Structures are given as C-alpha cells and as structure tokens.
Image 1 (cartoon, rainbow, N blue to C red):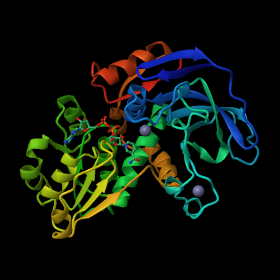
Image 2: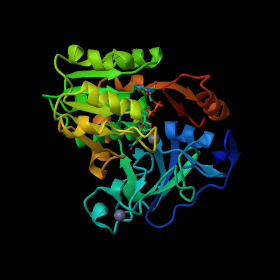
Image 3: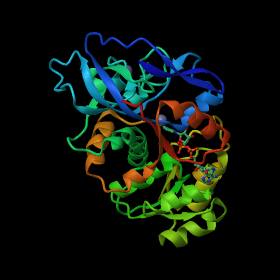
Length: 339
Ligand SMILES: NC(=O)c1ccc[n+]([C@@H]2O[C@H](COP(=O)([O-])OP(=O)(O)OC[C@H]3O[C@@H](n4cnc5c(N)ncnc54)[C@H](O)[C@@H]3O)[C@@H](O)[C@H]2O)c1
Ligand SMILES: [Zn+2]
Ligand SMILES: [Zn+2]
C-alpha cells in the first residue's frame, strides 16, 4: 500500500509500505479520505513534539470495511465507516465510564507511531473503534466526525443549551465545529472572534456573526443581545483567555478546548470575583463520538462547508508544506488516496 510517511521536521512523502494485517478483533479498512488536522501540521513542523520520525499520521478518516475479524461486530465488507481514534486501556474507571479521553493509558491513532493510522491506503483498527455511518451518507462527512465531536464535547462540557449566549474564540476547524455544536445543542445566539478574513467568511456562512478579536470585548454583548454566558476558547492562548474573561457575563463558563499554548497567564480576579468557571475539554467520550457520527448523516449542508480542499496522494506533501508555511490559508483539507 501507499502511506504518507513523516521523516522529520518539514519532511513528509508517500512511500510503499507493507499492507497491514488485521489480527484478532481487528478490522481492515480501505481509506476513502482523511483530514489534515492542525496537530498534524504542528507535528510536521516539529513544534508540538507529538509526532515521531517514520510514523504515519492521520486520525480524521472515512473508510470502507475491507476485511478482518468481522464476526459478531455487525460490520460487513463494503460498509462506510469512520474511526474513533482514542484507544482507551478498557480496564480503568474512565474507560468503564465510556470516557476513554481521560484514560491515563489512552493511545491515539495518528499520534502513537506504533498504531496503524489513516494517511494510508489501508489501516487496521480494533473493531470497537470502528463506527458505522448511515447508508447513503455523503462520504466525506465521515472524515469530519472527529473534529465535529471535539466541538460537541467542548460545548457539552460547558453545559451549552438554548438559553446560552455563546462566544467562540477562533474560527479554525475546531471553532467551526464549536459553532455547529452550539447550534446542535439549541443555542441560537453564537458569535465568533476570528481575525483572518477567509476564515471569518467561512464561519459567517455557518450562521454565526464574526467579530475581529480587537472588537470582541466591546462588541460581543451587542452582537448577542447579552454578555456571553458560555465561551468556547478554540485557540487556547493567554490572549484568548483574557478576552473570554473580559467579554463574558458574571458566572460564565469558559471552556478551554484550544491548545495553542502549554502555559497560560490567566486573569485570576476575573475568575474569582465574578465566579467564572474555566473548564477543560479534550477529545470526546465514546458516546459523543458515536452520536456525532449519527448526527452528521442528517446535518444540513453547512457541515460540508468545513471541507476547504482535497488532494490526491501526489498533492499530499505539498499540502503539508503549504499549510505549515502559511502559503495556504485553507481550513480543512482532505487527503484522498486515489483508487
Ligand atoms: N482539546 C482537544 O481535544 C483538541 C482537539 C483538536 C484540536 N485542539 C486544539 O484546538 C486549537 C484550534 O484548532 P484548529 O484546528 O481550529 O486550529 P487553527 O490554527 O486552524 O485555527 C485557529 C484559529 O484561531 C484564530 N485566532 C488566532 N488567534 C486568535 C485570537 N487571539 N482570537 C481569535 N481568533 C484567533 C486563527 O486565525 C485561526 O483561524 C488548536 O490549538 C488545536 O491544537 C484541541
Ligand atoms: Zn485532529
Ligand atoms: Zn483506561
């Protein structure tokens, strides 16, 4: 098979690799499309140290079942599926609760170099992480389930509901997923802070008003009709946490889903004296991923706007280089192995 192999900072290329062999309890998948995640690009540049030379990345995928240990799984060859990339240990309290994202021994497909991953023609994955998609679904939507589930979990962590006035900080793929999740959970009033004009236009097409970050503190209450009661920070920097505190109502919930900075300076008195809550969010629970896979099949065509480009194998390395250098300002790009 062909696979996109990361050699080290700034270097990635398509190579022939042995076909993966499904073991007991594993399913063989033929990949249809896999999204490039910001974390893949930061791994490619070497910035986040979370990717390793000679590894194959890829964790936002849609695929077709091609074989493996299918007995008792309910899966059949030819089924269109996505993959929950969070592999819990299945033996701890977090895994028992379906919260594999907080399992201390979790491994993540596309991050752990030892695990078969999705920038490849074929991958193997344990059957319980294969999530079927509704028959007739627009296939590429399957590759959006993972980032959409990140936004859904963030909104749920913040207790998002119809009465909330929601501010989303950052209009990248995760911010876009947060907008759709807030709508999905019944919040009609959503405003987004995003400086980049092309990203702002994409976010506006999802039905949210967009403000420049310089306007967000003064402008979000006017845009929403009330100060935000829920902030979804899809950047995760000291600047955005400061904006979240300065713009939001007393008692607001601020969800930190963005991970741009490892250490933050937080305006402590704005949290203590106005009793705001700062809430962490990482990935999604097993059920949130599965329910997002069901939801995406029925969602309106706004979800399709999240896909900002497609490349075949011979465009994959250039897509990484252009995203990393800033030569491309595309949002979500899918790599589509040609048949
Ligand atoms: N917690 C999780 O489980 C999880 C999962 C996936 C991604 N992430 C993290 O979420 C973050 C967002 O991911 P993404 O793929 O959307 O990234 P991205 O870099 O594509 O998008 C970030 C957006 O924020 C905008 N931005 C930058 N500074 C801003 C500011 N001060 N105010 C408002 N907007 C600003 C940028 O213009 C950009 O459009 C990243 O840090 C990523 O690592 C976290
Ligand atoms: Zn991702
Ligand atoms: Zn566990």
